[in-house]
Length: 353
Image (cartoon, rainbow, N blue to C red; front, side):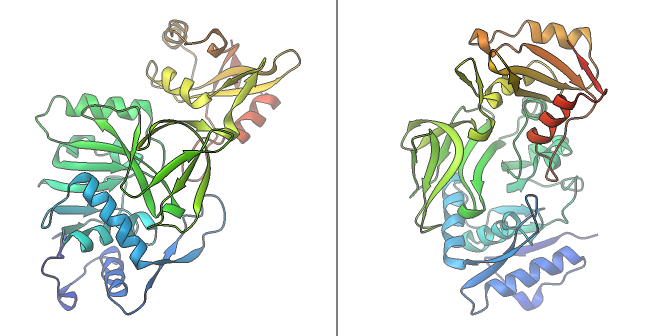
């Protein structure tokens, strides 16, 4: 089947012929965009509750699109590929970026393997971690890829590097940072070819920290309010920051604050399994640091973990627990609260060391 390509440098909406339901939805959104309305309706994913529909000003979406296009130096007539649902901000912004920069938009129905039939190079694409995981053999065809929707695991980063380092591809791959209030992302961090520690924010955005050490964002072209997050960060300079972890997840063990996400990155560089650090109640420590590993216990995994050089002695887990399956939210993120409850109940599916 022929793939739908929309040239926004030479657009005639009436000549857009769709063959799939998704292509029809893309066409309908384009018509909505060029209507007299100053607002666009966007649906939330519903991962944290009942899905809702809300209105966003078109001018703010244009500002967001310009930020991304400028950061990646996307030029007029470059190609882009949309493979994300058009109902959500992620899909809508791919279309808006194409409109604003007059790109050629390749329309591919959202699926776990969106690049399966791709044979030609694409200048720009946005995908979820799952889509990237299933498209490793075609990543060399994407010049600029941004990954969002969920955190990019260390194992996926390693797979990306192992796959692309053998090719002569000019591919650049970035992890995104953003939220619905910022209309997609406001910062990118390179994963490949040279991995970066810090996110770099877009133009016309100001960052700071509150008393807790959590990130505050002022993006007047995207949102009139200063956005307060619960993300603990290290600010390197006015343009760069490092994500340390969610303040909700911080573990206080014997007076020491421990950021589990940072330790998980360290462990996942050594083992392919999912790994989660938790703090369980302890009379003497307040919270005892434990490590949860998804999957069966093996000597290789135990040996790899034992050889990890943690920065602080109290970063070393007091206990390692192997569990068949780690609890996740509907959008694939680790459900730490449910996992903690499960561990404390210890209902027989757990192997402790």
